[in-house]
Length: 232
Image (cartoon, rainbow, N blue to C red; front, side):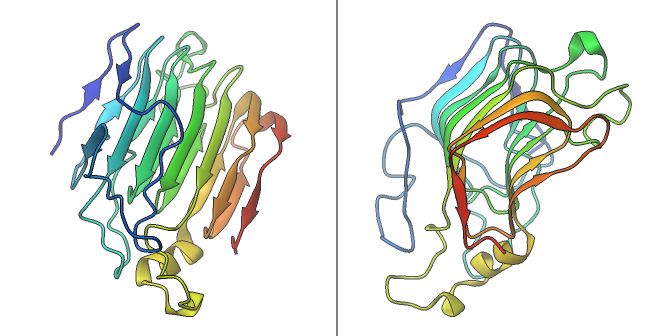
């Protein structure tokens, strides 16, 4: 597929979930992501399926890719959600078996078009390659500045339970997907962002829990609570 849904200015896309979403999968069994509640099933695609806009949010959905298997390395996909615009974001969303979850990018490379006051809140699941990326230098190479302006707020919890082995199985026996994540995945990847605030962010089983890179002026703000487990 090569189609993309871009939310109109001031319009949000809301599903049935109003809080934390969890589908434990291989570790604990059902419920399955196709068993109830609002969901988007995403497979092979050449573009990001969803894009926000000014004053527009995506809220209350599970994003699930059934084409990624627990026994093989994941297949590359573009971000499931592009977050762009002023006062936009993602709330109460689960990224399950998704290759690249959320990319927060500037809009057109000019100061007037920069993404700002972004809110990524109560995001869960197991994104496989990147969970949340923000203000990376290669996102808008034609612009003068690729960072995010004041004041992005981010809260997430990523666990590998979808591809983690059954209880009692040693970690060395994990499926290939999980072992690939330990060597390649980054839960939070941040470049340039002004006054960014991170609240109780947590990830388990990623190659890197949080990475901060400087392309122009880097990231400054505050980290409040949270932590990382089994991140190499």
